[in-house]
Image (cartoon, rainbow, N blue to C red; front, side, top):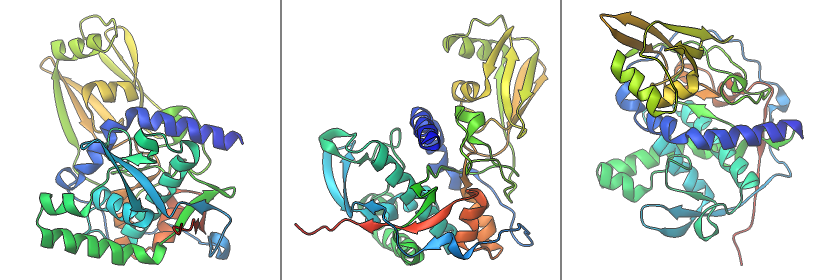
Length: 338
């Protein structure tokens, strides 16, 4: 029960900061330059009991989705919705094993939300298309408008073919659906949930992630930094020396500037930084923030999953690596017949 409560609190906190990291993940293909592939050695032992063919967990076969842009609610097959989430969250060019892992994580997060906040949207919809509230979603029609109809068909065909083998699978912990968070990328190590939202979940601890990418630098003038912090409600003196206090995973925990300590997560939102894994350097009166990774860093790294898949790891090995102590279970879909 305690784990379920903590997971609910974390999920609520995620929704509060969702606009920042969902937008980041949606732009990942443009910003993430490279990832490590090849000779990756991660000890992952998948027990025979990790995947169960059936369970008593029930999931709706059809869900209601609120189209935030049109102000309308539509019904969609749950698996088709998952396909649209994967299309929005992960490039179809990624290894099929990574796409499978993404589909299972997305389905798990959806069921977690349905379980804890059913009908929480307009007209009793389960989820919405507003990425500021729910997971990114891309319909085939939107994909055709964004690319071409032929390109959209190719992308959705690739995703359907890759994810069909994991249809209906979810991640569980202690026989309950897990709060399967994921993010765009981490630089060598993921983050623990307790360091971000204050709730510790056994399956959301920091783990090694096999990826590297070019750091991203953002520069702020002293006045600009001071104005942004004051605008967020921090009564700081004109910015002077700045100090970073790191947590046990090496990410920033607090930043002390202008006589005030600011939680790193809040600073990230205020300044629009990519992650809390950053360094700060003063140079000619400016503050140079060098960020590594993209997103909150908790759960599965999408780029890390791709790197593992390219090195021969299967989707279940990827999931067990990022979500320690979990198991996969096949849900029972509710009948769609009247």
